[in-house]
Picture 1 (tube, rainbow over the protein chains, first blue to last red):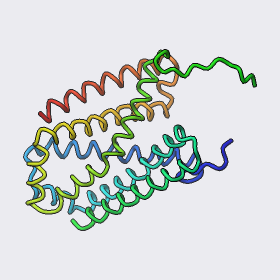
Picture 2 (picture 1 turned 45 degrees about the vertical axis):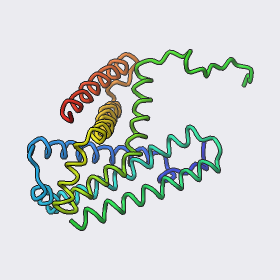
Picture 3 (picture 1 turned 120 degrees about the vertical axis):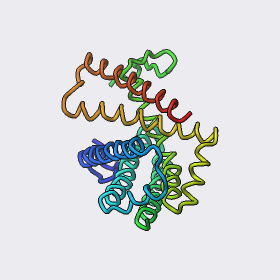
Picture 4 (picture 1 turned 90 degrees about the vertical axis):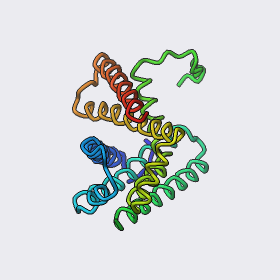
Length: 115
Length: 124
């Protein structure tokens, strides 16, 4: 058993569950965006921002951005654990990826919040 | 454990079943999507910034090079979504056997290929 591995929650089952929950959120969000684009082929700026002014869409987008960060972290963590054998190197890369993902979530939150 | 077991790690001599190919492509498309996250967020933030930003984005994404990047990004998303749904179906016990797993792997690859071609048609 691997007891020293760092994961999102230091718990494999919780990681698995978070990966699934975030996957469902992202899948539904992608289909939602697809429907928006398909039903409005001539989408303009006014319609686009009006959509994001709606609290439900705003909340859904924030949830999708958060899910994206969690989902990406679990995925990248798994890949790094599989291929990077040197612990020091792996921890460095994990730290870098975490920093990038947290910045991306914050960037996304700020932009969507200020619409 | 016998340490002198024969080991074959030469990827070129290993035959990959469809399930293995679907799996590694799921991983590769995931990495591509992770690398494209800044681009996706840039597109989202520019589209919401102002009417000028929205129009500039439309012009920018219509350039041939950007069309290709958009196609790669959306293809990775389409593939990752299809292969991901295959995993979610497995959570419910569907496609866990060798035969059904193989069938769902072929089905996922077929569906993803259609979507990738469809995306290409839509973008160009």
